[in-house]
Image (tube, rainbow, N blue to C red):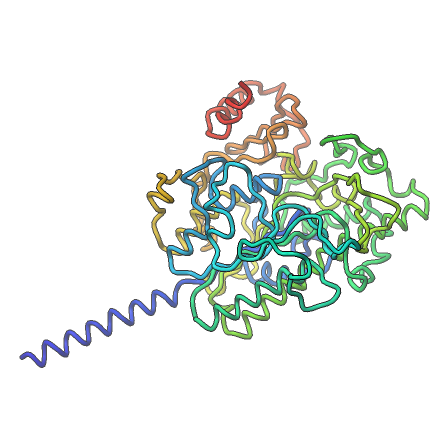
Length: 514
């Protein structure tokens, strides 16, 4: 009898152990890739002519969102994406806290840029097992001075340029960001832990610096000009199905740069391409070729990551998400000198008309709640879970990632963190969308800096430009915001503005103005 009991106990223990192993095996690795200051149509899978075969692969074998919102600028987007909050403070929970709770190894390599409300315990060195990062703009190449403008940090320690590890000379930021990520992935593979890799590239943020071979690939391709290429992209986006079917192309004259500072007409005003001299066209072709080269180099590095996963048998059990922190950026730099775009001593910036091309077919740019600033590509790739080459028109937002992580990890949201009660998440899970189902749309979406804020609820959206009056759009009927309904439906403006004012973000802004 005792022998039978012992055998039954051992068998039950074996079954429990096998079940535990199965659950462990079912947990996917997670990679979150973020690009910087790139327009939605710059990506090949969203209509662009820039070569992005590896991002396109994720799209063609995964899911594309046609309407996905960011917070329209580097720091608020990262703050909201990594915590699931529009605003917060103590009690915010970083995505890496969630993966750590689930037993994952956490790796970060790239840009960290937060709003002041994000607690210190959410900073990279406090949540990632390995981290290499910088917190503000830095050049791509090592400057002639031998020092980068802003510091880099390795495992929380400030390091000098000569301490940065890199494989290809001359050192180039996009490449060595990936070098660190791949090094730590190798270490993780040896331990066979599930991993979370956060890979926030800086491409294609100012300044326009790229490897000569990458630039050469695009030189001359932009002599067609922004008018013709914008039309081509718009048509391709329609053919791909990555636009709402009723999305019209916004006129370039409606997209002047009204953002900040002293404006240079040559940079901020639209001019028909055919009105420009041949010398000017050649200069502008180079500018856009360098920008394209920066994006191309980022895609090459994403390809390195995918190859590493395939070589180690990890790709089939990895959820990969790709997005951008905001729309294309037309803010020229006051450092622009006589050096043409491209090399390490150049500080060129993308101008308004090229940024307008990137944001095809939408209006406005980075910082703005208009769709050109707040609308990002979002691609989710998950073999066996996401149906390949699918497109959804359901809207999403970066605050939805935290509840999505909870669902994917199958863990509860913690009650407290660092002695603080956790703040309730603002988003809702995208897992049902990944699985091909409908989800209940969140009550609202927000984006844009306060003077450029947008608030969307259902089909209607209010948005303002540079502190102006609220504009109102039926975003379902008018995706590119061509018909301002504020005067014809004033009660809807009042309703939405009151709803915005009642949110924690709206209340915080109201308090700050007192």
